[in-house]
Image 1 (cartoon, one colour):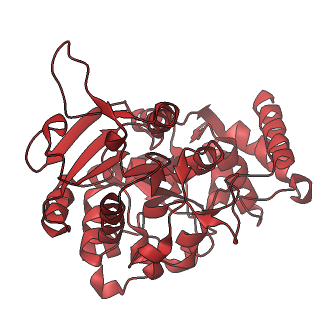
Image 2: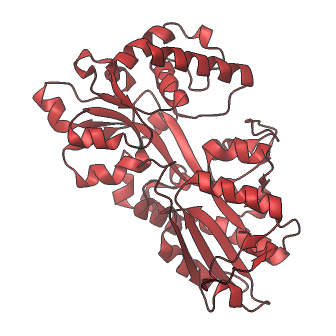
Image 3: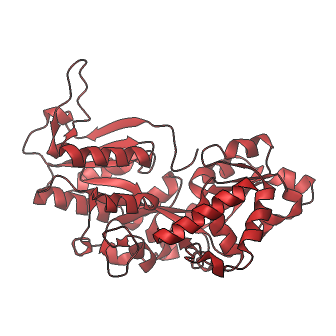
Length: 391
């Protein structure tokens, strides 16, 4: 049930006339490949009425996992072509062409370094985007990387964020009340002795080591772990608190009552909390990890037409309009980055009042993206993670 590992599904939605394989060769098509559920379908219909040229149409293919999107990017890079997704005739192979490679692809920031280093995507020129400047600098920085995918203030822009969420603490209200346990407000509360063997932790070293660093007043992106005092002791104690580690099925033990708290991604729990009064969730007040989904450009075809490039830029700008960002934020599990710079009066009350999906600015300002580490630092993290898990 996590944002990086859903059941793989593939659907296709074509707006306009005709199947992909039967389109008029002169008609421009905006092709999008996105994570399932990340774009409300009604936005496609609204956009198709606005785009220029008016003869253009929109196609969306949805994938269940970012891993599957990376695989497709690798295939397109290798062959220089993609299959026509709308063509479904038994025993007849779908046609292939460079034109079927999507204009834009959805990608989680955790995958950005891999895609850049393997040259699966190409930079985006923000000068061609009308609404880029409306985003706060944090959203520019997550996309600004060198050619190895490492965060670099002098690097190029490799994508445009359109959704984001955070790492949160999910808890059982009833279990906390029955056992007289204070409601959690911050990471330190995970070390409460009353929660021994009652916590589900994400099976992600950067998340678990990172939240422990945050509890100790350090950064998720600390490069020298030897400078973080009491880190090993803190991790050993947290390991004793954990009943399980999982990034896929961490919600089920909590729902069943086997665990009473879980470190979770807001995209997995925001709807669940609204539907289940027995569940509560908080964004830790000392700050947390932020993740983002971005629009990126595949490396092929090498010579994309001016019309296709214009359509892609129009779509990105469309996703950063106040009315549209409200729809994305209301109808998907996480919110638009434009919300953090919009006038509060422009944000729908149901979004503005939901502190789980839109945390207060003081918490957000203490939160961080998890960036790629230098190789030696990553080795240090991996070694510590393995040693702690063996204790």
